[in-house]
Amino acid sequence: NFQAKEICDFTGRLFVRNLPFNCAEREISGLFEPFGEVENVHIVLDEKLKPKGIAFVQFKKMKAARKAMEELDGKPFKGRLVHIIPAKRQP
Image (cartoon, rainbow, N blue to C red; front, side, top):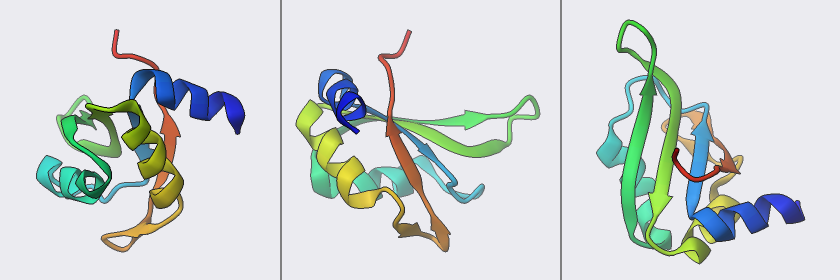
C-alpha cells in the first residue's frame, strides 16, 4: 500500500514477524544485506528473555528497506514465511 511504502522510505526501518524463535541477529542481517547496508537488527524478547519471533531491521538507506520489504514479504526463511511491514522510527 502507498502509505506503507512512504513510511518505509522515510524511516528505513522494517518490522519483521513470524521469524524462527532460534534465529540469531546475524542470520537476519544476512537475509536483508543483499538489499543494502543493515545498520541494526533488534530481536524482540519476552519477559523471560526468549525471542518472540519478531524483529526490527534498520537500513542505512531508506530505499533499500523498501526493496527488501517488496522482495522478502511472504517469502520463506528457515522454514517459515516471514511477514514484513514498515516500522516507525525508533523512539
